Image (cartoon, rainbow, N blue to C red; front, side):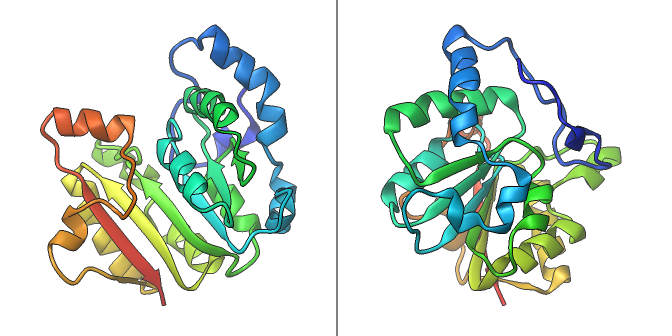
Length: 231
């Protein structure tokens, strides 16, 4: 089992526990055998295009990719783009590695610590876009300060995403959706692109769905899909 790193002690980190259920044998093997090959160190983020074996036309970050369904789909559809996935939750990382090996993609690199640390190291305006899908809503009021969408992280996103690039957010928690709209509008560096209700009701183009989203819909929760453009 992977040990916790020093970033877990960062005040108000947006994630909680690093480990859930005991990993299956295939997942344990993936963590031991594959993670060293796909993971990159924080210091390598200062030159992110060098992470990939082939030249890339741009860079995209997915924050908290869960089981990796969307990240894998996005990377397979855009082989010209370099994708970085940040996921500190060991169980999600293990599932992703198993599927990544099967997919054989070379345009994905993985970071297993706090995405805020990564955003601080990336060069300014280096990202074409960043995705945050179904993040932990931290429903208890005393934990709201741990939500990823907050002024300091919006500062980080605004620095790393190029003008005209996008920040995409999806959630099935109405309060977090409203929170996100309020925080992003107050921040001022991003413009909500929606022009009609279907713009936030319909999934993104080529959306593959995720395990979490399927469960949310089955339980009667309605997803919302927001897109913000970097001004």
